[in-house]
Image (cartoon, rainbow, N blue to C red; front, top):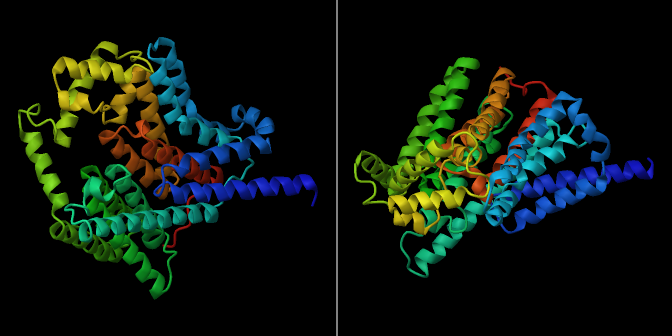
Length: 423
């Protein structure tokens, strides 16, 4: 083996190690994660493979499709043309940099990028990170409850004190989706001990989702269970599996909701808020906040629907509209649109919205056609989440989406064959 081959092999090992580290760290530390992404970019720069492969982006369909996920970031750069607040624009572009970096690195890497086995290991490492992060949450909650005598430490923001509860619930639901794929669809979990371990992990993650009390998290969990039930029943005709899994999952879910009523209480309150005509009077509640924010956003879109307000002026326009409507609770916390589709529409106009929707819908159609249900489930979850959160405005959302979307698409598309399923 030549020194050049050894060098390439070393960069390949570093690349994989950093992917594992990023997957494990996403649900653990928002401080360490950016440094790992920097190391991944440095390894890519030093390796220099992009000098040969970058021209191939415009010649090879696979590379082009991977790189196309960065088009939204490029559109945000174009949005600087009619921006006045360049300071916020710089911060916003820095936050969204993952949308450019991951597709660029993967599209200019040596093929094959990842095999099925390596992708599976990364997903398991992510699940391990979710377990570790959840145990840290519970340990801290125990300390605050039994030693500091603080109430509510096991719920919502008090539990996920350094993460947004909705994003952490999304992480856990993604881990649940991956386990359900390997466990129920691919049937790659063999033996009583492994089966019992996977069932316990599923129950643990479901319990944590209930404790996090995120309304969108609870909804997405139910949607994912429904999706796998549909796949098992109508695609693979595994009616016995459905007959065991569906009632078991729902019983566990609603039992946790009864034992820990914080989540069910938030759902009930949300129903009351939506039925209430006076949302401004109770603007401090999260559901009412969203209603007020979406009404304000709608007004901005009416006036700037074609080109948007520009990359850097989104927050200023929202704050001005909040001020005009006198929704001071929303204004005080500088809240974004709480809907990524709306947020992108405000910033980049109809072209930005269509591009974002295309980034979700087209890969979803492809994944269903090629039976890459694991990837479809990811798109399904993030697509729903974007209705309730501006995912690209926070590190928890944008890195999670950019990393796993690029990873799963590259793995599925480059291999160009469906995952093995035992009928």
